[in-house]
Image 1 (cartoon, helix red, strand yellow):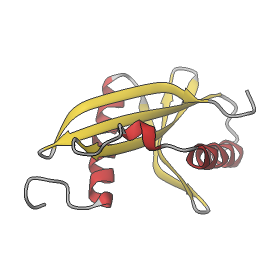
Image 2 (tube, one colour):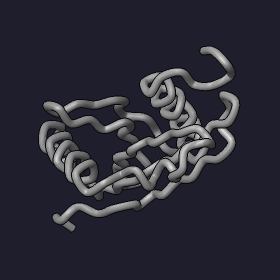
Image 3 (cartoon, rainbow, N blue to C red):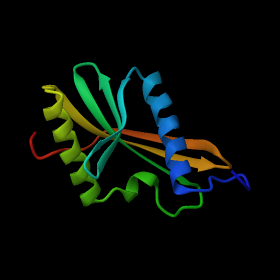
Image 4 (cartoon, helix red, strand yellow):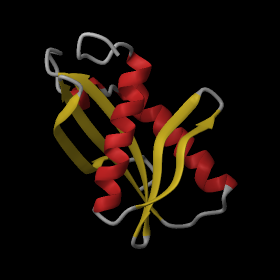
Length: 127
């Protein structure tokens, strides 16, 4: 890293996921999978909490970005996460309530300065 900033989108995403994972684990969620793929679709974090399975999208940005990270999730991204989650549930024969959450991480000078967690950020059509 140079200049005190995250120097690539991938690096920022990985660090954001690390921060999000730690944040969620401190709140009692248990990691099941990280960066799970179904075809070209990916779920950043799949976690267990109580009787529910949590499919988590992580978004991270620096403070100089004009939008909050969670504001960058569009309809197509949500649809892809829902489709990947449906595949995951089917493949693993899981019959639990699914929750679709978002963790938004804002970095300043390489440090996370704001973390927002939206536990039930969006819903699939099967509810």
